[in-house]
Every structure is written in C-alpha cells, then in structure tokens.
Image (tube, rainbow, N blue to C red):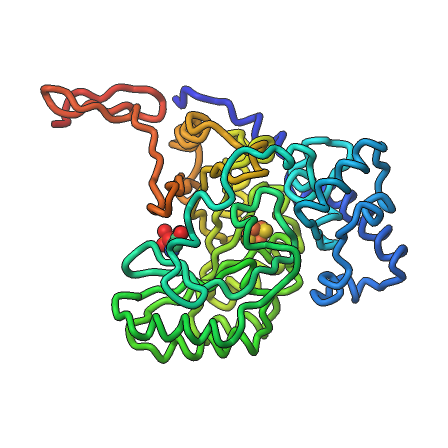
Length: 391
Ligand SMILES: *Cc1c(COP(=O)(O)O)cnc(C)c1O
Ligand code: SF4
C-alpha cells in the first residue's frame, strides 16, 4: 500500500547508542584518563571536564596521529579562532572518518581561513538597546550572560562574541538588562543564553531567574545551552530542581544522531523527569547532517528520548564557516522527505535568520499546494494529486 520505501539508508546513520560509538568513546576516554592520571569519577565531574579541555594541537596529537600538514593547519587556524573541546566530546570522534560529524564540529579546519562572509550578518550588535540584550521582536528578547561555551563549535554563528578568553557578563550589565525588561511591559519571554547559559553557576542563574520571576509581565524564561551534547555532566538533580522552581524551559543543540549518547540521554532524562521542556535547535551543516536520512534519524532519536524537535536553522554566511554552507534547495528537499515518512513530532520548522537582524523566516516546501482558477490543488507525500472534493 505504501508506495515509497527508502528507509534502509536510515540505518547507515551513526548513532550514539551503537557498539561502534561506544567503543570509540571508551577507547579514547581510557587513553585520556591514563594520560591525565585521572579517575572515572573525575571524568563525570563537569569542572574536571572544563579544566581539562583539549585546546592545543599538542594535546590532540597525544591521542591521534596527525600528518604534518594536519598538525600545522590545526595550529594555524587555532591561533586565529581558538578551540576547546571537552574530553567527553573529543572521545566521540571517529578519527578514521575525515567527515566525522563530531570532528567537523570541534577540530579547527583549514577552510576556516577563507575570508568571505561577514562576522555579524544578523546585525545582533545593532539590535542591542541596553545591557547585554539582543532584541528583534516586540515580546521576546535575549540576554547574553556569558561568551563562554564548554566547546567552541567550528560552525558557531556568534564567533565574533567568542573572543579569545571566557568572560561572564558583569552583574551590572545583567542588572541593566533586567531593568530594561522591567521597564518594557511587552516583553513576555526572556531567553538567557550566551555562549552557554549553563556555564554560569547555579547561584548566579538563580539570582537572574529570581529577579525575572518578580517582573509580572515576564511569563516565560528560557535558557540556551549546548551542555546536553558537549558537557552532559553539568546536568544534575540540583540544576533540574532549580529550573523547575522557576519553570525554566531549555533550548539545546544536537546536530547529529551520534551526539545522542547514553551520557547525553542520562542528562535529558534528569531534565524531563523533573518536568523541564527540552527543545532541540539543530543547525543544518554541510557534511555533518545535510542528508535527509541523517536529519530523520537524529530527530527520531530525539523523539525517542523525549526531546522536542523545534528548529532546523539554515546556516548563515558567517565568516570562516563557509565550508558548512548548504543550499536552501537541499534543506527544502530534506523537509519534503520528512513529510509522511516520520512522525509529525520529528519535523522541525526550517528557518533562515534574515540578514540585518530582520528575524527568522520559515522556509517551507511549496510544491504541495497550488492555487488555480478552480481552487487549490494539493499533492500528498506520495505525490498523489488531490483535485476533487476540495475547494
Ligand atoms: C530566535 C530569537 C528569539 C527566539 O525566537 P523563537 O522563535 O521564539 O524561538 C528571540 N530573540 C531573538 C533576537 C532571536 O534571534
Ligand atoms: S554552543 Fe552555541 S554559542 Fe557556543 S560555540 Fe557552539 S554554537 Fe556557538
């Protein structure tokens, strides 16, 4: 009855729960623990993970063989755009695969030296009315609370903010931002992000949540964090209780099914078991996930572990990330593929962040609807045309 059967390719996508992924992880993890003379208990400690981030080519070359060219390139690019990889994330790399999605997202690449593109195409700097706020919409805005992240994604679209050293936003700037929100009654939702919001201590987070929760027109607080994929050990019961107390919702970023590991799912479970809503904002990235089966499988893994599929971001033309660019037609093809082939829960909204800070624009395949003289003509997911019984 079902005409289209092309699902077998889906099983070729690497997932975080496979024996293959687990072996990679355990092997590199044990090598790192031995090299640093550390214990399994250290490994699960987020502070240990942050302190022992891999941030030089000398460290990388302790664990994997690099050619002279690779060594020089990582060094050269790293001097221009710093890198830091948690031992956890580094241990998911498959070094036999030059297009390993974990490697592409974390290790400097010579293509980053391409000078085309802009540093701030969304003109976030120009949408800053006060403090550390970015505001483009009437009733929601962002406060950037830090420029630090556990791992510096090579595709980061906020590269200009990542700078060369980690810096949390000062208490004064946060207070100025909160004051702006207090004085603007249209703001109903506040996004606390960075960098990675969960690099702030629980005490600092609570101080912010507490002040925001006292503003009557602020109905929702949301945090942006990639720790679920880069530093899952940051998530524990204490943090989940804090988020629950202020009904904080979480936006995260998983870009590939191989990032959804048993460790990541342990973190997801803690949040979801405490009633925290977790949504995924995936970035479409060339060679990482620009494949319809990969996007399908990744969203199905998220669905399975109770993470809500939210956005698929079209990559912007940010300087030094050109090698991740994808054509919009590719994204639309992926969206069309998802229709009917998977659960509705696994379909993101595909969006383009308009240049100049004009906001997000949804990108929707249009072939399935046609407006003619005698009404609409629809095309189903199996390419069946509906012309009758529908005006
Ligand atoms: C994306 C974004 C938001 C949040 O938008 P949602 O569509 O609600 O997730 C808010 N402010 C700015 C500046 C944004 O870019
Ligand atoms: S976690 Fe987000 S802000 Fe941080 S480097 Fe990655 S994409 Fe950029």
